[in-house]
Length: 396
Image (cartoon, rainbow, N blue to C red):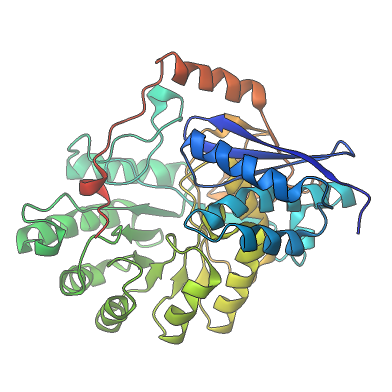
């Protein structure tokens, strides 16, 4: 028990980045991030949770997690909890004068391996024209194999030792009717990237849950010669038996989990022996409190964890602290979106992030920069890309 009390919770809106700030009567603040990108929903969440948490001791993280969960059991429950949960860990660590990872079990590793997305494929990639506020439209430019290979070599020159990409153009007959020529074209992209980076760089293929089991198996077998680190969500993640069918017929490790909302959804996948890599999202799964339980479950089944995060830097730094403490960690997804939203900014050296040693997360929101960029969104200087999600990541 501490002598601190929660006095306020406020959203800090920055385009599509839903940051959260928790205040205490001792002047210590904590920061977090969730995945709810609509500012109206974000503000509504925070207004509701204030009623539950004002006056509470921020050290009682587990009890407050259960209190929030018990009061908001509907579709936005876990994202609502996630950002605030991160902030509570930040507050507690600051009050005790230690980094967050010390509260999660101590330092298991001092630097965290990360991977970015490859430009030119159907993935999130920071748009420099909008100062990394938004991603480039997926498939907005039909890049050649040579151009894609060049982008891959650029990442290797920057020091990265792994990268992820979605090589699948929208199918003429839809993704469930992907034709042999379309599968061959996707395989050519994988082959070009592998040839460009050599065999010492890990490649991950993202499927975004677009295929059914039969098509996914055809694709997976076509990709087997390229030594992929994993094949991600080849079918919609909630289709347990379909995912099991793919994992049993394809000789590539299977990754899944970014759409999961709790440890309960993970249980059946582990019992069926499906995933090799679990990719929960800290901004969606329920923050660090739930993530630690998911990591323990995965460790028991020898499943590695690789937190999903193509979003903002607060979720990224929370992922760094989790990765620093968790034995089952493999690699962290990190796209440099809105890097200026925190201070100091995250630095990547040779494909790794050094784990901050300062109290808490070791960073704070840079609210002056956030305000400056948000004003550019509001006056129309920055225009969010229009992407047809039915084509780029259909809900099947």
